[in-house]
Length: 198
Length: 198
Image (cartoon, rainbow over all chains, first blue to last red; front, side):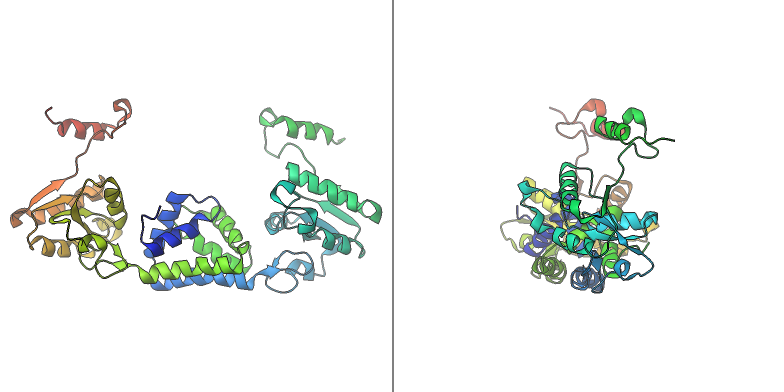
């Protein structure tokens, strides 16, 4: 494997750890780093450590944050009685882009997946239950529509059953602009189940 | 554009500069860095600066090297009267893998491309001419079969015309295992031109 100079080989290995990067791409990336100016390489290197050092998790919702509390949790104009539960911080960004949601979030940090060793105690579920007891009216569970996402949603909704809050789930169906002809069976089934009167 | 936290955005911008990495991939990569342990992030960061600091260019052939002179130039068992001229250090690795070549190399550091501001003086051509005067018998020009590669090959061979060394070019033709049916016209034409008697 070690066909390159050791420092280059080490850099290739680091790039390979990134999602979606195979050996060939990693080699191209490592060579491109060698072509950078000293200053640019230094900037790249410190961007990694800076991001890692400066970004932490919001103490309330576990969203990524530079401060102890993230800007969303610190925003008094938002509805703090409505919590949208998401798998990871990236999902928050998707919701924030559409601007249709004025509540707050709760990041689980993953989904229940015993096969990968992710049991409910590894996720921020206990924190969520604590938050819900503090005057929350509705919890929207917005985990992904995967087996694990569904399991997690069901688990959380069962925990919240007797707390008196409304628990909802995002609607499933044909994506806007999608073609019914090409929708998969499960999605189409969900779209029929979830049909609404005009 | 700045939808992410500033330190994260900076890291995304750094990943975007890598070859073949678009915005979405860069975002995924940056998030994956946040998921690394502190130690792993530190390792990644220092792999970049280490590679940049420790790897330099061989004083003789401009190949990548940790020492002043690369292992190939320092190897006395190789034929130093036969120089294979390549565009970049990656090409050397390709040649070394096949082990069919026992001469030495010369890395140009690119190809002549006036449109991109790469004139012959930006490449290691003067160094090559100096080396050739020092008892070299043959120069194989192994630039890529592109317009720029061809131009560079022609330019170098014209400079070496009166030095008495043999100047050759890699053979063009159908790749081994390739299908004539799918070969492009230019390649097929070159294969016919370069035909050899059995």
